[in-house]
Structures are given as C-alpha cells and as structure tokens.
Amino acid sequence: MGGVVRAVGAVRAVGVVTRGTTNPNRLRRMDRWIAAAHGPGLRRAADPLAVDLGYGAAPWTAVELLGRLRRIRPDLAVVGLEIDPARVAAALPYARDGLTFAHGGFEVPLPGGRRPVLIRAANVLRQYDEAEVAEVWARLRGRLAPGGLLVEGTCDEIGRRHVWVALGPEGPRTVTFATRLGSLSRPSDLAERLPKALIHRNVPGEPVHAFLTAFDRAWAAAAPLSALGARQRWMASVRALRAAGWPVADGPGRWRQGEVTVRWEALAPKG
Image (spheres, rainbow, N blue to C red):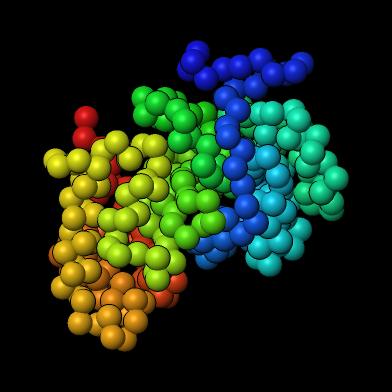
C-alpha cells in the first residue's frame, strides 16, 4: 500500500487527503440503515465506540452520527478521524461529551488500543485504485472489535443516492442501494454511486451489471404501479428480484425506505 501512505505532521497516517466535500444530512440514509441493521450489535457492545473515518472539511457527519446512534445506545461515543490536521483543528470546537476528533487514517489510531464496534468510511475510497480496496478493507476490518461492522460506500453531494458495502471482521457481507425514490428514472441510476470495489465492474459479464440490468427490467415491468407512487413501484421491483433468485437480505420495512440490501457474494467481482 506504498502508494497511499503519507506522512502528515508528526504522525505517519495511512491514506491520502480527500476532497473533503461534506454537507449536513449527507449520510442520513447510511446512518438510518446502520441504526436498524447494527442496532443489536451496538446495544451488546462492551465498549460502544464508533469511528467516522474521513469526515471531511467540516464535522457535520460525525456530529450527526453521534446523535443518531445515541438513540440506540445512549452511552455510545464517536471519534472523528481525519488525515488532514487542519481539518481536525477546525473540528475541535464541535467536540462534546461522547464526541472527539483526532488525526489518523486507515490505521485507525485510538487511545489505549481500543477497537470500535463500528467504522463508517463514506466517500473515502473513490480516489483510490480498485486494486487497493481489498488491502484497505482488510486493514480496517482488523481494527474492529469482535462483532464489529465496517460500512464503506459512496453517495452524492446531498445524500439522495447512496451505495455501501457492509463488512464484518470476516469480510464483506452485503451491498445496500439506497435512494430518494423521486430522484430515480430507473434503478441503474445508482450505478454512478457504486463503491470503488464495484464501480468499474458495472460491465457485461460482471454480477453487479447483471443485477442492475435485472433491477431495471423489474422496474419497467412494475411501471403500472407508478400511479400509486414510486415507493410501490420500488417495492414491487424488489419483490420481483427476490422471486427471480437474487439474495435480497432485507424485507419490506427497509424497501419502504427506498433501500434494498443484497448478499455480497451475488454481486462480488469476478476474478
């Protein structure tokens, strides 16, 4: 990973500085899913610590993560990590009970050797090469507490379209597609937000391309439901995907939110 190691300040942090683009509420869809899918893990955690890795030029996402997850676990703490020391300094006035900011990257430096039950890395790997992703994932997974979760993905600037991969200490588990349904003309519009591990695999012969093609066909077949709203059309499309054998990992309660989660092995790149 020699291409992604930079010495910043007095600490050797692993990674490169991102563009830092951030907006309030940008990660609300991801946070909402984390609270629903990982809520039991957060409640059971002996040390309820979450990391917002690469929060960007402003600390909004870390502040929001704390507020949203404390509804699940009131004593949860969040550490916002940034590789750019200037961004850490700018975030410090927003520190509060349960929320701290520190300089660091993929090494996830935490005091006392603590291991987080959650690492959220949103819009961090877009500028990396696909070949680097597996090593970054392995490094981050190695920092998780037992039963911990890594969520890595990409969204647009205001959080209308988002795709992420959920990984446990053992490896990738699922891929979630989430959107504001009114923003879609077809499900494959989400392809532009595929995480780095998948975005270059959206070509014929690759599983993710086959999935998005099947999703578009199901969406087209459900067009008569448009009169009832985009939500009903989306839900019918997901039901059709499940009936066709795609391993959809969630249920109508999540579909209603404009989400669908699929097992990683069904979308994993070939080769």
